[in-house]
Structure formats: C-alpha cells, structure tokens
Image 1 (tube, one colour):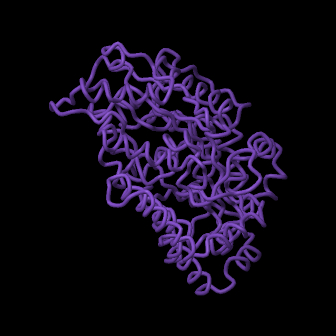
Image 2 (cartoon, one colour; image 1 turned 90 degrees about the horizontal axis):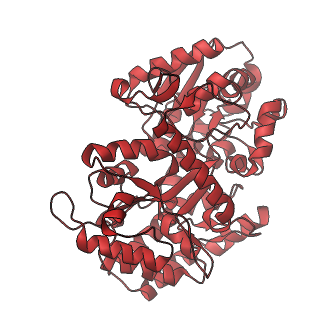
Image 3 (cartoon, rainbow, N blue to C red; image 1 turned 120 degrees about the horizontal axis):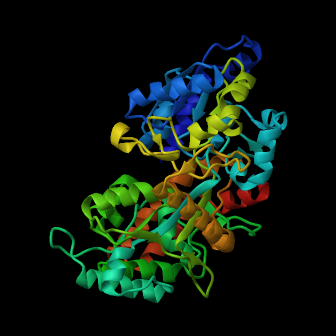
Length: 489
C-alpha cells in the first residue's frame, strides 16, 4: 500500500514540524536570491544540470539550484527528502496526484498567482481539464507541463509492407496481422516474434487495448461527458476485454513480460531490438524511436495505427491522461510570488523559456544546422524534447529539420484523433479530498493487476477473479468511498 505509506510519512512530517507550513510562509517575506528546483528530469546527467541552470540564468537573470531524483521511484524519493527536512522552493512532481501534499500544506494554492497573470490565466482557460488534473477540491496546486500524456499504437510499417499487409482498421484485422507476423517474422536471434509490446502495471499503457472495451485499470474514473465516477472495471464489456487479452496471451501475440512490471524504456529497447512489431508508446517519441530502430534495421519505418472504433463503444490506439508532472510551489519557499513570477511564468510565457522547457538546452539537446533545429544527440547523448508546447501563442524562432518536423506532425495527428475519439480515449481521475480513497487507491490498483494477470496466465478463471475482486471491494468499503467521491465532485 504505497500511497498509504506516503500519506503516513507526510503526516509524521507535519506533526514533527507542528504548524511549520503556514507559519513560515506568513513570516518569511525576504527577497530570494536563488530558487531551489527539484525534478526527475536528467537525474543521471548532472553535467546537463549546469547547462540548464546557465541557460535559465541567461533568460531570467535568476540563479537556480537544480536537484533531481530518479523518475522510477519519484514519489518515494521526494517524500524521503521532505522527511529529512530538505524542501525545495519549486518541484516538478514525479506523479500526478497532489492531494496528499496539498492537504498537508506542503504545496501552495496557485489560483491567486494565476488570477494575477493574464498569460497563465489564458492557459488555464484554454486547457481546463489539464489544470483540473492537478487540482484538489477545485483549487489548482500544479501547472501541467503538458496538456496530457498522449499515447498511441506504433507499428513497423516496413514489416507490414514486406508481408503485403495494410494498416489494420478493425480489431479482427489487428489480430490477424499479429498472427501473420508471429508465424512468418523471426527475431534477429531466430526466435518467433511476440508482435505486441507494451509496458504493464500502468494505466496509461494498459489503456492501449482496454479503451477499446471502455475498461480502465484505474480504481475510480470517468469519461468525458460522464456525470459520475465509476470503478474502472464497471462496464458491460469487461469480460470481453479480459477474454481478449487472455487470447492474445494464449496465442503468444503479446510479450510474455506483459505479466510483469517493467519500465517503458525496457519495452522500447525490445522494439528497437526487433522483438516486436507493435508498441504502445508516447506520441512524441518518433524521432528517438526511428533513430534507434535504424541502428539495427536501416530500412525500418514506423507509423501510428489510426484509431480502431468498437461498435459497442470504445476506441483502440489512442489514450490521453490529462496533465503531466506538474510544477508546484512548496510552502517552504520564502516568497512564493517570486517563484511564480521568476520561475514558472518564464517557462510558459517567455519564448526562450518555453523553448528550454519543450526543446531543451541549446547546443546540448539541439543544434541549429543551416537554419534548422535538429537533435544534438551525437555530441551530447541527449535527445531534443519534442512534446507539444502548451502555449499556442508562442512561435519558436527556428524551423525543424525533417525528422523532427515529422515528430511534431505526428503529435498533431494524434491531437486530431483525440479530438474525434476523446469520449473513450480520455480518462479522468478524482481530484477531490477523500482520505479513504488516498489510503486504498494504489493498493486497489495493484490488486486489480494481480488478479487480472493471474486470470490471463491461467492461475484462476474469470469467475474466481471477480469473486476475489468483489470480496476486496467489500473489505475496503469501496462503495462508500465511491459515494463520497461522487458527492464531492
């Protein structure tokens, strides 16, 4: 029950420091001479921290102390720092749920600052769902780095072409394509390919298939247009989904590591090594993926599979979780307004700051060649960030090289698909304060994963899976928790 442990840790910290959070903020108004920033980015590359800090100083004139933790266990690592009394001024939080930090007053409400900032206020009006994703009880506590985490189903089109296959347009065509690949395309070591590869034990990746059946592994969720939250398996199509995934497993069409927790980078590496033909992954990864693939397969080509609609309601191949790793201002900051004005605003409202946030450090992440922006990977080992900027009013001063421009175009394609299919491609989680839900949400997600994959690999049947799940829901009094969430939403 990781979320319970985090909540307990923050609670102990609050007790240890008494009324520290509110009192310090009121008493400390001295002008800040530097800003301490904690993030998960570039945690393995301290030399790049210096380059980022130097570029930020050039843009704003403000000194930043850049600290990092690994993204693998970001929440636990950040909490450990707080427990040790190490508080930054601003944090790019490693996970999206801010309710525990907000309730314990370790981060400050941002609405007063947003209201005084015409530019930031406009962004909130443009992307209300993204800002809402980082709100608690209707109060914004985090500024999203992106509109949302967008993922799609990538396919090796060079493999399709060699087999004389077109892009799959229906679920049956997708399955028959996977079977054809399984039967005829070997891996480089001569083994049979498992066509479909994806990270598991993460709702954003599981949604690659589950959205087709209007299923989500998230304990409590709702789709756009829904008035009430529901449990993610509470859909008439859940059995169809479970049996479909079991069929993929039994037919050896999905990577056997699907039943194990694995990092997204591990699944990409399998794809690069030719162990699969389909990969569910971020929409902004194109230029990295094609470069890595072509190191092993010079003729490789990839594309996103267009959304596959389910006549019963659902869509396969598009997924969006609103918001992403928000910037939060800690209560420990001597002057939160100074942090907002001199750290957050430049990253979103200043052209060079926005360039730093969405493309990276010049001459480190990218270089300008013949007037075109392209990756500086050969020199620095760092790819340019290609995520979609959240501020549409800012025009970057450089045009993209062909490979990078294609990456941008693909994200635009995904935006169009999500606009058309958002009803089933988007999932919203609760942002209201229900302590009982904080206590059980992560544990419940783990329980669902455990029960589901035991069913898929044949350790119990569907009825036993559901019997155990319903027993678990009664044990944690889930119906009461869901009622509280809907009453407050």
